[in-house]
Length: 93
Image (cartoon, rainbow, N blue to C red; front, side, top):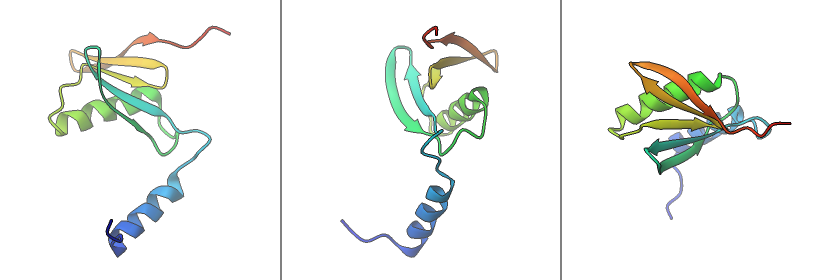
């Protein structure tokens, strides 16, 4: 494995300075029922709907066919160009 360049080290420092280990979110991208990708946000600064919208946009830019985005325990779909929450898998307390 090669050493990181100075630019990569600076980016890692920048990203880790914004990472909040106590309040990050898991984002999962689906094509129908197939899980395509899982990643995390650095913090919970944005709403779940904003994170879903960003995930759909990013997937579109990467030419990924995504039909559903899960942000934590909430699922979102893009219907007629708008992000809609379609399910919540949170357990009742």
